[in-house]
Image 1 (cartoon, rainbow, N blue to C red):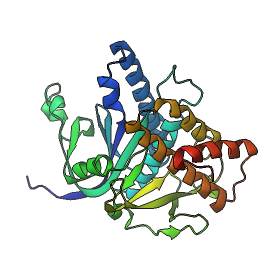
Image 2: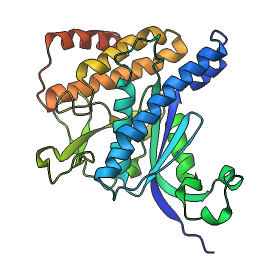
Image 3: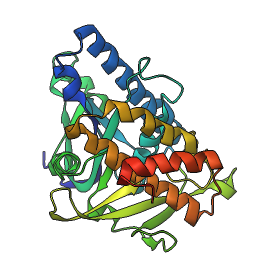
Image 4: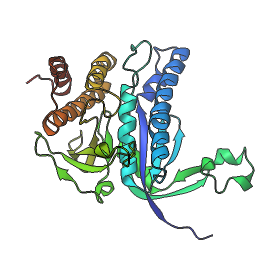
Length: 312
């Protein structure tokens, strides 16, 4: 049977700090299991129940293939925007999931993602071959796995670009089919793309049928190397509850994470996540003319202190 080379948008999502949890000498094994169970139930809910299922219910033509193993997830689609929208949604929901819980009740974790377009291929999953009759497997995606350059590049874009923090890192070919519109209202280089809101039925809710995704260029990595990458700015809002979490949620989560990231090696993840969230609120304030309360302004000062080491 002749094989076809097919190019798809492929994303890799990884849980930051997984290795530190499982190899910790300070945590008992039962506590490690409780922490991991908490993280992955959150991830399952954020991906499946809050994102993929509702999108496919409203937009059945947006096909997605997912595969997970250990602390990582691959998401693939023929449509680049479908992947961008899904990853944005997953990050926002995952980060705000435990806003009403203490750190003792639920461990807070960060994600990182890499998104590329390259060739991939589906093969029968080896584990499935040991448990199911071969005849029922060939056309069933539940029994398939992903291989290919897209898989490798999505992983390396996330894990080997030398970029810290909860980031959605995008290879430039992913954005080639979009019009990148400059955002001149903010103090940093920023663009946005405007596409359909995949969680809204446009025939019913035409006024909110479009959504903006904001894109930040990355010119250098943290080693000082010149790179040609972008990242998706999350969260950014037209209103405070566009993605089920309000403005307070994300700032408060960063402040709660401050005590968790005291080790210098890990603190870089907190700093870079705080920097990205601070930029997202500058977008909300300037681009959408969003007015924040005095309470939010006070929290933003603390957020800026974490991100840049200064309130000025």
